[in-house]
Image (cartoon, rainbow, N blue to C red; front, top):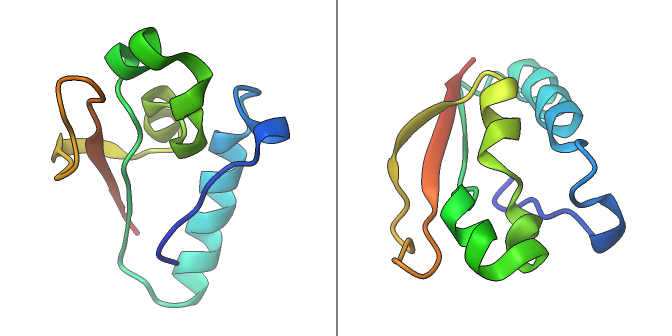
Length: 88
């Protein structure tokens, strides 16, 4: 799965944790060894609001057991993004 985005009607409702947990189950069944996501940091939400929520909140990734690895390659001061990973 290269990309996962939440549609407008599913954003900002706390569903990212359930989606990530289901994806972990699927990934394990496929013998994947790691999942990675690139949510925007809180500073990006403060600057841009819900327009960046399609990638999920960092707190949802943390709640689903992902750990912060470092900055994502498209991160910028205007829209900070971070790599979050979980080993399966």
